[in-house]
Amino acid sequence: MPSRRYPPELRRKALDLLTAGEPVRKVADVLDLSDQTVYQWRRTHLPHLGRKRRPPTTGAELSAARRRISELETELAVHRRATELLRDVVSPKGVSRPCT
Image 1 (spheres, one colour):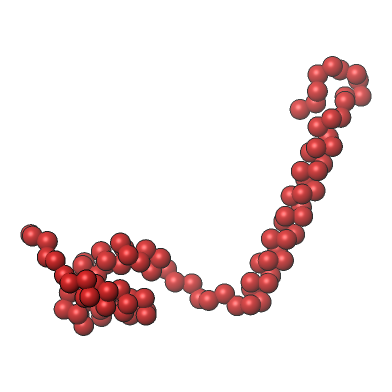
Image 2 (tube, rainbow, N blue to C red):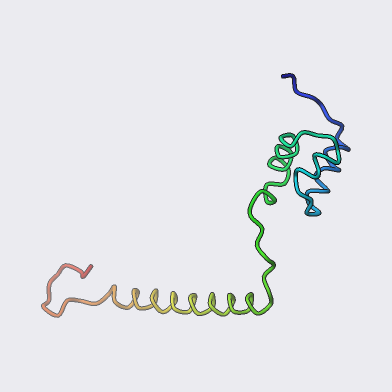
């Protein structure tokens, strides 16, 4: 089946409708295109629309996530510092090999 060339304006209109939230089937019907063509354009030009949509994050969720990230960064810094301090510890038996 030969590939069909569509005007760039038609592709842009389809992509604009998809970005606005219209379903692929409706865009294909309105613009008289095949579903597969619209899916291909979406996959090529709007890959972020192919994923499942999540509800928008609220301000409270965002601040809780930032607080948790801060806690984890602090905890990581403590572990790194402890690792630095313990790296230089000599075995109490006087063994010449460093502890691992």
